[in-house]
Amino acid sequence: MDTPSPFSPPFPLPHTSSKFQSLNLQRYLVQPEAQQHRLQPQQAAVEQVNDESLHGSSIKNPESGVGSNHVFVNHSATAYHVTFNQDYGCFAIGTDRGFGVYNCVPFGESFCRNFENIGGIGIIEMLFRSNILAFVGHGDHPQYPRNKVMIWDDRQSCCIHELCFRSEVRRIRLRKDCLVVVLEHKIFVYNFSNLELLFQIETTTNPKGLCEVSQTADQLVLVCPGLQKGQVWVKHNASKSTKSIVAHDSVLACFALTREGNLLATASTKGTLIRIFNTLEGTLLQEVRRGLDRAEIYSLSFSPTAQWLAVSSDKGTVHVFSLKVNLGNRSTDKSNCSSNFHVPVAASSSFSFIRGALPKYFSSEWSVAQFRLPGVSQYIVTFGNENNTLIILGWDGSFFRCKFDPASGKEMTQLEYHNFLEPEEPCN
Image (cartoon, rainbow, N blue to C red):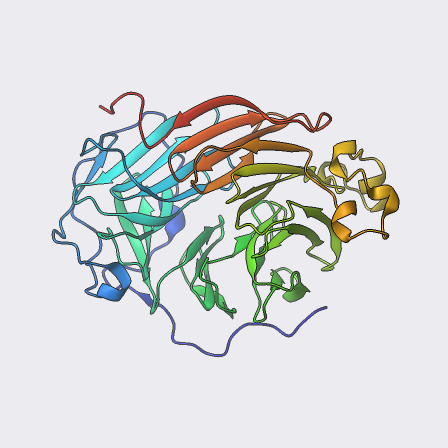
């Protein structure tokens, strides 16, 4: 059902640093140069805040520079954050010494920026494949405080703007037209061109910084936790409406949005069921089962046409589910979406013929493909640019590209593996 707007009453606005003049960020936005260039050490753009509770120990040297494409110490870096860009063609990592950007297919390092004082970057977000990134410090020696969002222009190799908050930043989301900053109890949405605050939303406790935004739609669709356990709010900026969805009885653990913003997948802390909703009407379209025992869901990802949904969890297995809504064949007649789509036999339990007579899990829809991951690292997943391929990234530096056959229901085939934290060849 539709609910009253969750926009909060007047709240002290985040502080924009006076060190930066009012600017139009669009003038900084350029396409990356074909040739990588070596950056010269520069003076740090931001003065560090002396707040131990937010950033651990303060930075000793405020005039730290950045190095381009080389490693300052012999041991491999530690990843604090790994994330795909908006078109899933590349990914960024925040480490204990800086950050890097890598291409997915073909796999390869685009560039890495290492701070000379070994400053850590925790949260990082790319803006497609442009020179603009946003990040937050992390670790024992963060490069920037954990309550500040830094806007980085890689063409100039410096921060060009900052936003300072009263509490730790949990997540950042970027679109071409807006910047979203997620705190534990509040979300701020800014106009990207001038960083003016558009609106803010109060949420339930959100330590993971759960928030997703549409990318290909002309108008913003934003999904975030509501004020109640298991509740999701879907804000449609075009219609100025907010849809409330009670997705689960338990606390939300993860959710994902299609690029158009019309489908939403959710998982709770139980981690057994994943539910798919229509964001316009708030209706439940499908429910699939990851397993019977509890699991922490790390990531959910739709394929570009919403034919498949990928799920990763702490159980060390990536699952691919068949969905009944194919956005590539959508029309005004909703019946065409499901009637023309073939669901593989492996997608449902063989006990479905006695549906209703046995517990619900006997008639559940199960995954059509799986991939077993080594180790105990946290992994995120997305779909590759080739049909029926997945890209899996691990906090331990693992990069997997796999292929699945939905008709067979068998294990995926590994196509390639790399470790982006341990370059095969030293950077020059």
